[in-house]
Amino acid sequence: MKKLLFLILLAFGMSCNAGNLELVKGNTDCLKNAEVLMIALDCSKATYMGEKDLDVFLKKARRRMDWVEKSVDYFCEWFNDKTKRLVAEPLNKDGQFKLDIIVKDVQRSGRITAEIRLMDTNTGNSEAVFLFKSSDGDNNDEITLRDPMKDAGETMGKYLRKVVEKAK
Image (cartoon, rainbow, N blue to C red; front, side):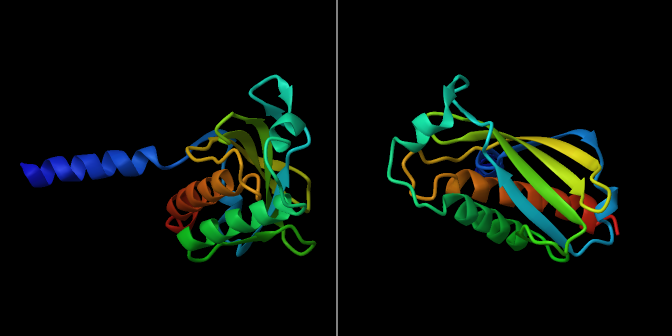
């Protein structure tokens, strides 16, 4: 009985630490033969706590000038740790598919809500749209979105490994 209770608590704890990812439109079928997935982060329309400008959040702590690029690096690192065949890398000109991570809102804790769009770079078409809510954040990290991007990378990597890599 103790082992069963431990396993239930362990499963609950693991689910609480993962970000919430919901497919709201389209599908990921286009990735079945893909090897590289480019990653781009867009915070241009992000708000802080639903109504304030993101600059209010950014001014709360010392930030690195390259925090956007470093945040993308964390996404890629954690994504690549969860997948086998599909590799995420920062945006370049050679990949056919990319994930546009569009941050909508940053909460006081540093957690984010974002829309993640799977795009075909050859056609410009959106293949899938996800809604992501991070379970992790840090409001005073020099790399502003490090924790939520680690969370997003891990969550998206697990999802794509499950639905794309195993479907092949």
